[in-house]
Amino acid sequence: MTFRELIIYGQDMLKNAGILDFENDTKVLLMYCFNLNYTELMVKLLEEVPEEKLQYFQECIDKRIKHIPCQHITGVQEFMGYEFKVTPDVLIPRQETEILVEESLTAMNQSVSCKALDMCTGSGCIGISFFLERKSKGFDADVTLADISKEALEVANYNNKNLNADCKIIITDLFENITEKYDIIMSNPPYIKTSDIEELMDEVKLYDPRLALDGYEDGLHFYKKIIKEARNYLNYEGKLFFEIGHDQHKDVERLLIDAGYSDIILKKDYAGLDRVVIATYKKDGL
Ligand code: GLN
Image (cartoon, rainbow, N blue to C red; front, side):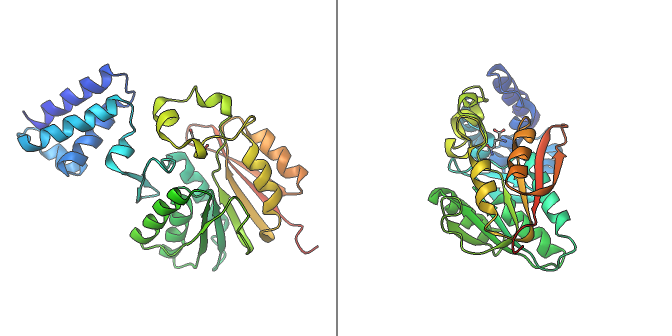
């Protein structure tokens, strides 16, 4: 059997199982099993597949058929050009979350130093890529990764070391163990309404940690708490960067205004959906 034939076989299996991204997922699993990058795979299309690895590929396809996300099979997800380890204890980094990091970087690109907090960090992808991007441009960054989950922080700690970042890590229920002040607080908190969780794709509903999704009854539980408490942990003119659900902009904006934040900016993602809200707190010390 050639690689090309194996791709067709895998794609048929996944397509028949109702996996939407069957074309891409087959290639991702194939590259993973046979330890090839995309170019290598394309060059090998007409070559014979090494028999001894076929069984392993079949096992990966069988897992994907059960809607286990590719990232839980390969153990990694790329984010901002960096490879992050993922496990079932962390939300798989989403591409649209890169907008949050990019906006944070842009907002701070005139500041040689920056103290940043990534609240509800999960895999650490936001804070770690913020740190690495700042460093690659010759800027300083003092970044803290915070989460309530010990298991998630183990993954964040691995990513921090593996990617040669130097972020601090704190286990904390929101701001409970936070003692310092920051120039920016970035957060992609759980924001799905509890009642909407059942409607999510199996990949998300069954395999992303519930703890990272559930924003309680109105989906706004963590925004309410973070908006209120962050005021005590932001330096003067400090900024809050939130990822939000596509229909949460008005509610989050109202919460921010009521709590005394200003300069509220909304950013959309590449699909044109509301995705990031930025706000400034100018009241500290006045
Ligand atoms: N964006 C995620 C989703 O689509 C939700 C992430 C979150 O709750 N922070 O399911």
